Amino acid sequence: MKKVGIIMGSDSDLPVIEKAVAVLKQFEIPYEVHIYSAHRTPVEARDFALNARENGFGVLIAAAGMAAHLAGAVAANSTLPVIGIPCQSKVLEGMDALLSTVQMPTGIPVATVAIGGGANAALLAAEILAVSDDDLAARLDAKRAADAAAVLEKDRTIAANL
Image (cartoon, rainbow, N blue to C red; front, side, top):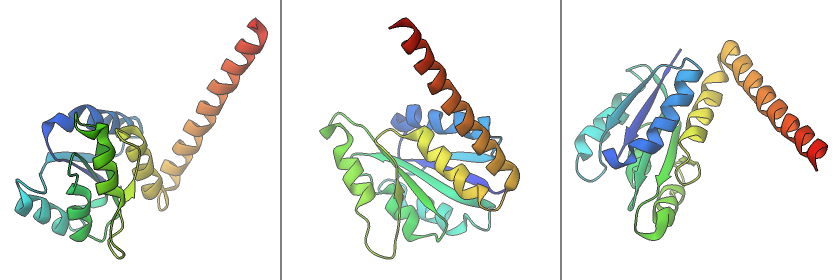
């Protein structure tokens, strides 16, 4: 199975990345996590993206706050799917990061999840990998079914008690 590469702009993004890692572990998807800044370590971020396919990655996740250029910088240097996670900061509550991540020029796409959406980024990465992995696709289907069953059980409980 291909790995998921996770890059965060700084260690302040770690709580968001931990949510992504938990999902990847749940689905037994191999991953690597790195801190590379689009601004402070641009050479390392570029090298990681340029060599990602050759290093066994199938999807890249990039999380950053504030200026949030990391996902775009990664996407500019790789044709692998890139999922951007805008991270909340004290300034503008993450809206700046969301807009920086989602507003990419034609030709350099970045799939973008919600502000702080680490779990959804990992689920989207799993869905991308599942295109060519039937076992992973079955595990994703089972999770969806379990999630639906949990909601319906809550519905039955509410209906019975109200």
